[in-house]
Every structure is written in structure tokens, then in C-alpha cells.
Amino acid sequence: MTNRKVVSFENIKVACKNCSLSTLCLPMGLTPEDIERLDSIIKRGRPYHRGDHLYRGGDKFHSLRVITSGSVKTYSPNEDGGEQVLGFHLPGELIGLDAIQDDNHNCSAIALETTAVCEIPFSQLESLSSIMPSLQHQMYRLLSREIGQETEMLTLLGKKSAEERLATFLLSFSERFKQRGFSASDFFLSMSRHEIGNYLGLAVETVSRLFTRFQDESLLQVERKHVQLLDIPRLYEIVQGSDRAKSSQSRI
Amino acid sequence: MTNRKVVSFENIKVACKNCSLSTLCLPMGLTPEDIERLDSIIKRGRPYHRGDHLYRGGDKFHSLRVITSGSVKTYSPNEDGGEQVLGFHLPGELIGLDAIQDDNHNCSAIALETTAVCEIPFSQLESLSSIMPSLQHQMYRLLSREIGQETEMLTLLGKKSAEERLATFLLSFSERFKQRGFSASDFFLSMSRHEIGNYLGLAVETVSRLFTRFQDESLLQVERKHVQLLDIPRLYEIVQGSDRAKSSQSRI
DNA sequence: AAAATTACTTGATCCGGATCAAGAACATCT
DNA sequence: AGATGTTCTTGATCCGGATCAAGTAATTTT
Image (cartoon, rainbow over all chains, first blue to last red; front, side, top):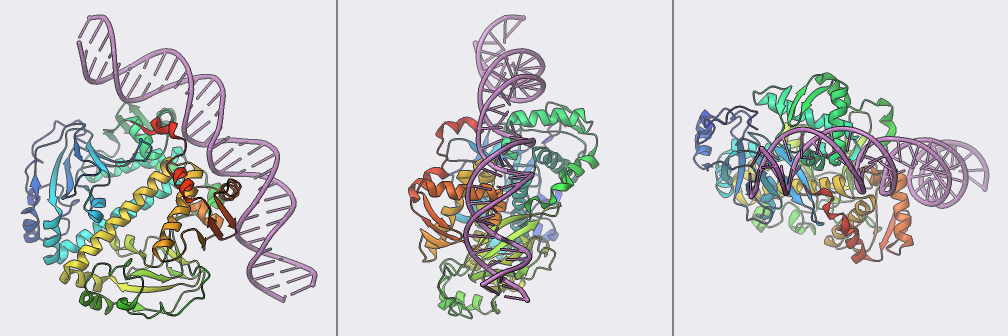
């Protein structure tokens, strides 16, 4: 997600200690010396272009990857030929965690735009974490966070209306862009309506209609991939289920 | 899930090395000496009764827990007062992994029947794993597996029909009971229809109707909580989306 | 620059599953 | 055993969002 800035090369081949993402990324909370040791095992390759795969389901797993610029979609093929979009990943986010379990990638990752990544060979990371308790702790926390995030997604897909899903989606990007120093209310989405729908469990048409509706209600201004959130507080209200009467619905 | 056996006390206060679950559980793949060291930090309390909470959202996190007998439901309250069932857990399964991230339980766990658990104080587990690479590796694998499993759940909730969801649910229990030495085709479910529906993103009535329909189609025989699967191969076909024509639906 | 392809939007219709309603089977209590 | 409260089932109706269909706007190809 370059967010219409010119793609800069400053994020490429930058050591962790000089990287602006270090507060979001794996080195978060490590001491400078520990960051140095972590840095020594990280590989920084050339950038991927839109449509390039970082890895595919079935590939042998060797490295975790952190997005440093651009954005990535992860997805898994579902038995009947279609696919399930699992996530959209922004700079500082770690992907490939699901592959540790059996040393194989079970899903695929594809660049949505020009994208740079750091590769972290997992066997080396594992060795390092075994002599660096702070890194081990950080790894446990990151894995646990991933579990917690997927849990929220279960609630979204299991209980929320189309409207609530799209509002949640938009606010998630708003928050993540803000964390990364971009505008929380004015951004470009790098994925298609189809991909948004697939991710949220909705048809493309529904996503498109919701964008139109939200615009009609002055919640946002949208023109293709360019989104401007105009009423973030009301979007948060929608996320929480504007129809408060339905609270009894999912009680047991 | 005692599965109508008399609740035996053999699973209670049994050291890992003598526990029948050790091939499914945390000690999986560890050497006898390593199991001994792991065993030394594990606490085994008295059993929980139906309706007792193992922990609640908001509780301070201190221990991971492994079910040793019985069964447990995990759930998270969703903003509007209802709840989202996150999972049903059988002996050998580890719960509480989502709490590592911020040292707090973000969801709750409640016993569905008389249930025994092993408690593993996390700080001790962490220290141990930092001097036992095999244990660290096992932890990474377990956390990663959890991520992979939630991913499958996303596909279920995002793309599958009610029929496919219930078939998936039943086969999941079938497989897990089989792994544990019970019948794959004849078992008791310890949760209510309402809880099944909540977990699968369906209304109670839909779950009930589907059980009736599956029975009418001779896929299974059901009487309240007692389920006998009569045609497992056809259930697998249903899981894979019997309507093969819809394959194009979720393409991008 | 025209043609072809792909992405998005909008309208019309349909349907799977939710909701509403009521009864039946159990479980628990006294 | 009878009374009360749950849980489950079954039927009738409704609705949110999918699907179908067609047109428009972007993008890519030639």
C-alpha cells in the first residue's frame, strides 16, 4: 500500500534498526543488540510486482515474511476451485505463520501492488529465539495475536450483517493506516471489490451497493479504490450493530 | 466427552508419561526425559462440573490448559450482549493460546460436562521452552496449527451452505473421536443445538431441521445428543460442496 | 485510437436460511 | 406424581443478500 506516494527505495535493504516499521514489526520491544542479531539473519530481496506470488499453497516452507512496503493478499484454495481470501497485509505485518505446523505453505500469498518484503528463515529464527528469550516471547505473542485476530473474523462472518462487515473492514484499514503514519480517513485500497467481497463473505454486487449506500448516507466518499471516510464515529456505531434490539439473537 | 463411559479417574493426576493422550497433546514427539521435565511444571486440579468456567474473558492469564477428560466450549462475548462460540474442545486439546498476546483472557471457557484439565503455567512453560528446543518447536507448531484451523473455519463461515457446515461439524467430531480411540460413527455431542448453531453461524431451527433432513436421507441416526453416522462417505461429499456447478462463484 | 477485456455499478428477481409461532419431548424441582 | 422451565422440533412467513442480467467505466491489447 504505497498510498499514492511515489514508491520510495528507503524501505528496501534498510536494516531493522533504521526501519520505520520496527515498532510494529518483529523487533518490537527488543533491545538494540537483540535487533542487531535478528537483523543478521534477515534477507531482503528485490520487490515483487502486482500479481507476483510470494509463495503458493504446497510450497515448502522456509521463511516467514514481513511486508515492508506495498500490500499482499493471502488466500487458500477451497476444494471446489474457488478461493477464500484470508487477509490483506500491510507493512510491518508478518505472514506465513500458518506454515510452521507442517513445514508447508497451506495457503498462497500474492502482491497486490509493488511490494517489498523481509524474509526471515524460520530455522534460523527458531535457533535464535532459543537463545534470545525476548525474541521467543515476541514470537509467542505474535502467534497468539494472530489467533486472536482470526477469532474476531469468526464473529464477523458468523454474526454480522453485510453493512457491519464492510464498516469493520474499512475501519480496520483506517486504524492500520493510521498506525503506519498515513491518513486514517483518506486512503487507497489495493484490492478489487471482488476480493473484498470474497474476504467478507459477500457477493461483489453487495459490496458495490454498500459503498454506494454509505456514500449516499455521507459516511464516506468513494471513487473506485480511493476512499475518504467522512464519519468515522458513525462507522464505529455500525460496527457495534446499530440494531441494538437483536442482542438476544445469539444467546444460548 | 466421556462418551457414555463411566467417568474414570484414571485420567486424573496421571503423569504425562502414563497418559494415553500424550501422542495428541503437548508432549507429542518429546523424549521421555523432556516429558519428565515438562511434567514437573504441570498442575492437575480437581475436575470441573458442567457449567463451571475454566476462565472468563478479562481474567488474568497465567496458564494454558489441556483437556484430559470431558469437553469444553470456548466463546467470546460480542459487543451486543450475545456470544460467539469459538470452539468445542476434546481431550488432548490445548486452550488459552489467544491469551498469550496480552496476558489476559479475551474469551471464556466453560465445561460442557464433568471435565478434567492439566494446567501449564505459561511463564514456566516459556522458560522451559527456552532451554528445550524440542519443546519450543512443539509450541510453535501448536500455535501455527491453531492458526491453520481457524483459517478453515473462515472458509466454512464465509462460503459454505448450512448443509455443508453441519456435515463438516459432524465429521470433525467423528475424526477427533476416532483419534482418541472412540467410535467414529457413534458418539454423544455434549453441546446444545443452540450452541452448534451459534458456532456454525446458523439458527437453532436450521440445525434442528438439518439433523432431521440428514436422518431422512439415511445419512445418520440422531436422538437428541446421540448421533450415529450411517454414511460417512456421503457426508464427505457434502462437505466438498455437492453442487459442483457453483465452483465459479468465488473466483476473482 | 479503436477494440477487447476486466472491473464496477445498478436494477430485477429469487431463495436459503432467519424469524416468528406453537407444540412436543425432556429435565428439574417440590 | 404433578408443576415448571428448558430444549428441541416443526410449520408458516419473511427478508437480506445472492444470483441473474445489462449497462457503464477503466484498463489493456493491438
